[in-house]
Image (cartoon, rainbow, N blue to C red; front, top):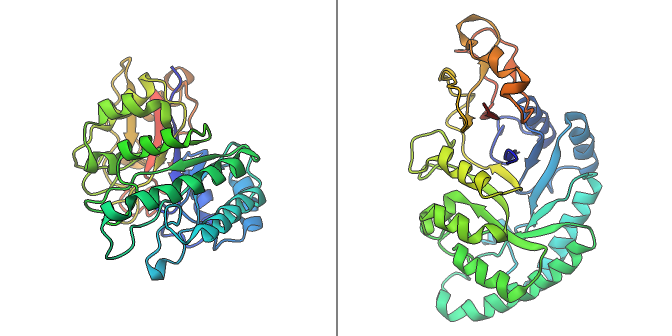
Length: 331
């Protein structure tokens, strides 16, 4: 049973750093070997390539351009009359990825977009679905030539995006069935799925064959997985692993305040279960260094070979470095 692989969403994490290149280095320093992002298109792709190589991380997921955010766009995949804009955006995403010098198979989130303002969802659904299927078919052909995978992501319409076209895993699975393209898959954001449907265990089991990427955040605050909320991530991530999920788990959440949480690392109890340690920072020296750290550095306690990092400061109370997920281990 292979351990899960995590990637840092650098559009949500390390935002105290204005430059995406700096965020790649911050993610690497926190132990991540892969990152994802919403939109990187304001960054020079060649500079990003240099930063990516220097940091030693892979970019494994980006979104297609959203369109004109100021005019209310949030993706164009299912928006009638914007087909040409969607295709130009897809071509831009592919070319951008190639220019950053990607080494691993990449996933591109093909954003569906919003139901037009003032429209009745039920009245425009058929037309929007037809446009979405047409655009997804086009995207599947474009992406297959580059060995890439397209993703569609349901976004909840109860809290986050009331007008978003694609809002449930059931709707997404029906669209994928009609489409019939192997390289267009389902993106599971447990935050959105919990808000819309709940029943996460059964939905994971049901839709796992379609899932190409997972994202995590606590409900309802969309904060770190170890924050107070409805979801038991030890159980949920263990379920994904036991069922054989092989993709990445994206850390797409809002950190609570600046810098890392001040909570000390809990003592590790030896067991056969996976241990998920979220939002913990080891401090070099002083009382901030937990006595469990040397034990975790031993190979037998870290078969996933994930990096365990310490900061360079000696004062846990003044450390301002942002580290939100340190590592995932089996012991």
